[in-house]
Length: 523
Image 1 (cartoon, helix red, strand yellow):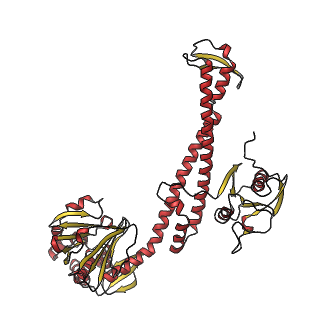
Image 2 (tube, helix red, strand yellow; image 1 turned 30 degrees about the vertical axis):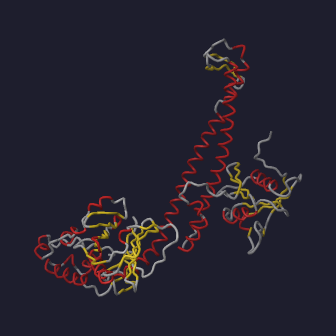
Image 3 (tube, helix red, strand yellow; image 1 turned 45 degrees about the vertical axis):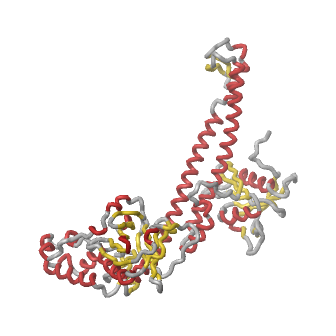
């Protein structure tokens, strides 16, 4: 009911007594959907804080407000120095306006997710807070009353239909009447029930913060579970806004964070699929260099100025038809194809590098989503957002470098830390208890992790390659053989206060391998 006509009528009445005679001291915004207006009479200050988001619109009234030093902008500068002369509530409407000196009028239109604030002077519209609602410039605050016939004759003509006679009630008054037996009462009894309730709405004994059907609500009537009782509409709206944002802010922010990560994950996966398809096409399609080789091997078999010729393809051991340019010699065409082949090779290298980066991003995003599932409180979510800020930025900037190198073999991913600090990030943030953790024995080196896959045993060949990487990226790189210890991550822990990269390993096994990177191309 915080935007219900009957509540706003009480609110605007209190604002009338609070604001009249006060001067506008400041008017600014430091959040996209928030406007703060400060008033003062020389002895005291009062602020109207309008939060008008698409999800939740409300007013609150702090007695002090610390303006941020950055990311803030002055708005409605014409209001500064103007004095409030009157607060006027529109009849049967969810809106009111402040009448100020020098002919200024500030309209508060509180229509749910289409709420807005509009500035007028001498009945001419000047500015909108939410410019997306351009039609609000056509409003006339002096003509927004909505007279409705609400006598017994109109009530009887509507056969007691509340929506026809009292469209401003909303759901809570209708529910309250239903609990009073409204639906089974006679027409006269219904009228009496409505009049009794209107007396409460016109002069509420208190303002209630309630929980109804699992949701926090502000009510002029006692419904559901009463959580808090307030003595004034401004106090009630402050309490409701604070409680509502505290309770629902976590859920909304959690969902927004999750959706943002999932969107990035889908985009990364799409790029991976496109890259893989292009690499497959380049690797398995007929390469330019092979066609050039065939042309050069068959120079004596190509007639001058031929545009098409059958040549022996020694790669497939059969005759094939080749299209040629009649205006070029076969040697020139082969030379051009070799240049294309060189560019093709460069493209493959670039695609492989891009694929590796996107694999890293995919793992980082997957781990971030898993970590998000463990967040259960607003405080923990704030810490999470700070820790993963590099993944959640909306700006087109490069993400932080992933703390590992990525290799893939036989469907398993192998991660290799890049530094002592990144070893910590890899082991503590991107590794889970069933992953296999490896490290060169008794020397400094990279942490290496084989990502576990449910229902799949890690082949000995994968384990050996991971061990070779652990040896290769360690101080034993130049040894002929290197002992490498390995164990499930659940047996690896970092003592409190230990230096970067230092861990304690339990229940490890050891294998001897040759230090090398098995994924490097052999020349």
